[in-house]
Amino acid sequence: MNEFENKKHLAKILNFLPMGFVLSLCLLGLGMYFFPAIEINHFYGYRTPLSMLNADIWQEANTYFAKIFLISVLGFSLLQIIFYFLIRKVILRILLGFSFSALVFVLPIFLTEKHLAHTFDEKGFRVHKLEK
Image 1: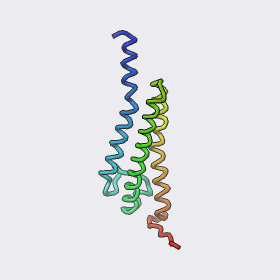
Image 2: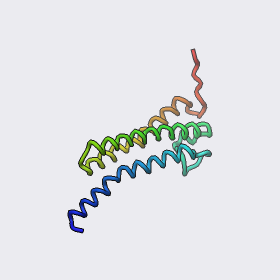
Image 3: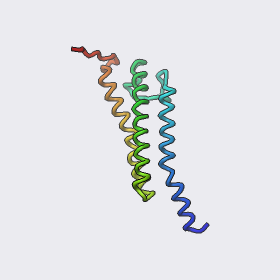
Image 4: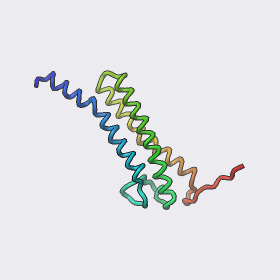
């Protein structure tokens, strides 16, 4: 192989790098959704000090996070498909894809913590809002 063919081969490999990343995120999200962490532990599940306060918060946090994470991954997947067809430069497509991938991790954490803060008080009891 000459240098031109090597670059062409590398470009083909790099072309599918973001899609491989999306696939691995999808598998992670599906795993968390279909096989949630049942008991509080330090190895698997949505682990923050608030989520590990008691079993009720643990279940709520892991269920909510898995749903939001899957929605984020699906949105990111659509974004990657749009990038694939609109952006011709492979390196730019990869940089934009990985830049936006940070949102896939940050957004679900932010939304889950916000949800937990509205659902539970600081001692870990559910907040019951009075209906009018």
